[in-house]
Length: 89
Image (tube, rainbow, N blue to C red; front, side, top):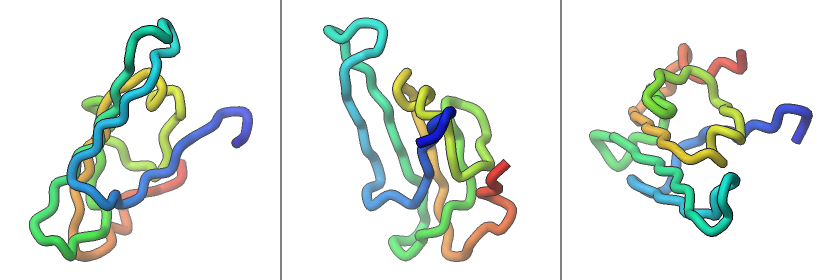
């Protein structure tokens, strides 16, 4: 991890994941980060679109602070790679 740590997005194994961990602001409280997947076919493995905390996201990375503060990542998967999605910058 560098000066600005980021997490990389890849196709998850599950259709819905909820991660629960201690809050940065108050370790006695929990923070949740949800990952949800939309796909039409079980063979759909390529990310077509992503929405991070309600904002269309076109990069394959996102700041670790967005994860640690809690939120939601919504992924839409398809049968073929979307070459317009996942640009590094």
